[in-house]
Image (cartoon, rainbow, N blue to C red; front, side):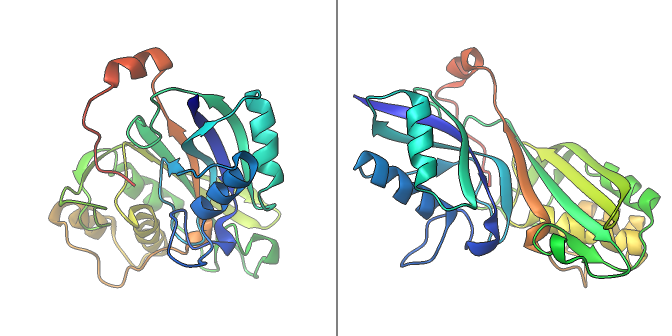
Length: 266
């Protein structure tokens, strides 16, 4: 009998062209996971993910689902799949969950972006953080980040994956700063129902511009109001971004949500 499996997936996205499967031999996270499952089960599978991370973006808490016939316990399936995955991708846990959909059942996603301010290049962080030299005004970045909390139109910060709706609700937008052996580490966390394409990286780049004094808080706030992208603000590098967690209702609550139309998301 075919069963639906729900799993949490972690990966270093440095060597992959994003999560979503692509044509040809392009290396993607989805493609690698599907290949591993098919080797183990000898069945064709389609892996569905909670979020479609971009090229070079990492994950600690990506959530996936797939349908297979499996006659052993869940732990045996996890071990077998991981044995067929490369070292930079691994399932963290797995269980059967009938009717579960990682995208449509999610109620929030949490992304973390790491910035390190240091006088010298830090080789060990080259795939983990955006490294900058210029000092940052923490207070200004915190103030600007707080403006994002609530329901806003984020047309200035990204494009919807489908349709034209650019309104999103942000539950959390905060900076945590601490000194480390590598320099001053600034970690930005943002939690929302869903995100536009490139939204987090454009927000981070804008907040860093505020911290460096090349963009005022008023200009940042104005972009949020007007929906017009800020001149000179590009995307923050992908390697500083991690899909940290995806939040779901309890199993009992999920049963009551079945059949509801999902929001646009990425």
